[in-house]
Image (cartoon, rainbow, N blue to C red):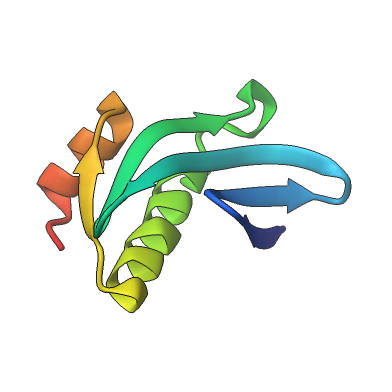
Length: 82
């Protein structure tokens, strides 16, 4: 699977199919994570966690803090603090 960062989202692609993504908006130095999605055919493989890992890397690399709006992002960051 291939990871692609495009504007305000990180996608996991399986060929031409989007297996999952995490999307955010940007406000000042905050990455506001609004949505994490994994296609039902790809669930149970840890892909949402992989997407969040990449989002955290992106935020750290840019010097941003994360404001999790989506429930998965909130849960992930409680278990894996930055």
